[in-house]
Length: 264
Image (cartoon, rainbow, N blue to C red; front, top):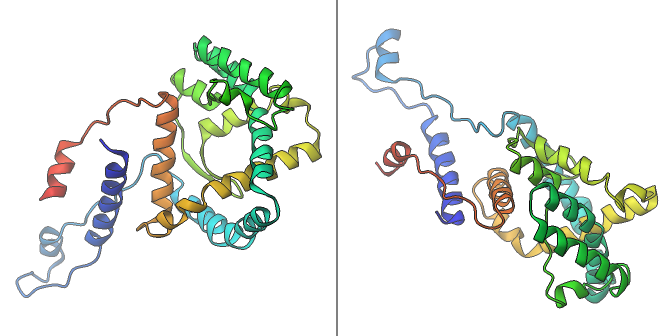
């Protein structure tokens, strides 16, 4: 099923659920005793997302991240960064940060049984770290070695470990217990393990600014969604599935009963 269609269905289900939960005005035909009222108007069961057992807390974190931290800090900082630093320089800095992840891509490719992917990551790191001046220039991509993003969260997924609860991390964004664990492990690889505090802060800052710049064009799509939080959550899980299956996720099973009820 088309991802956009799935996302639209999810948002429609959310809207319909909210509408169905609204109390209806009593009619003259409804009996006044509690038994008859309960029979005439059975209470609808709340629809919850099993992936998101901490939704109330996560939504609060989303509000903090997007309505305050992003609006008053990250977005203005990114706009200033884009205004002051020329595009070629921003690209070079982003390339350097991405190059630091190649060793993790290499080891996780091996752990996932993907020797070709690991070889590409090793070649990218050696080529970009030398000819590309410590990653400033992405000469590996120009040479035909496309990046292979393999993190330990994906490795755990390949090994059969589930996502775990969805988490909205303050000052970071969406994640899961599995991916949060994976991020900790990926930071133990060289060269991440030898970076000092200023270098780590610089990497995090450049990575955050580069990521926020990449989202500028998608900001309107997020703001126009019925539920931005649900939109981001669904998009996050779809991206995780896309990465886990290297761009070929299995077709999602359709709940025929739920679909029939929706169409009625």
